[in-house]
Image (cartoon, rainbow, N blue to C red; front, side, top):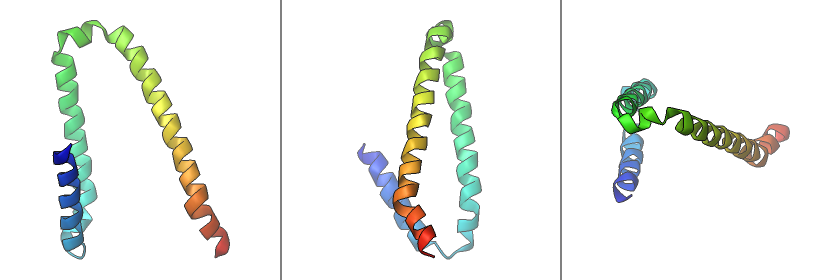
Amino acid sequence: MIQILLSIISGVAVGYAVRRSAFTKYVSRVIQIIILLLLFFLGVSVGSNKEVVNNFGAIGLDAFVIAALATLGSLIGARIVYKLFFESKKNDV
């Protein structure tokens, strides 16, 4: 957990330091490529795990339910944040 927090904090510090450089316009693309690589290697890991492959049916249903509920929760949370912080500002303008 400490590694994750230190990574985020150091990323914020570096981002703040280079916020006006040309590097920042490439950050979005670099993040997208890294996420795609992570997903690819996750797929390799899952595909090479015989136990996971043999239980795809049961795992798939559980994963679908969890993903659907997580997405629903994110949508509800985003709507609440929008209403609390952005909708009132939109009406004030």
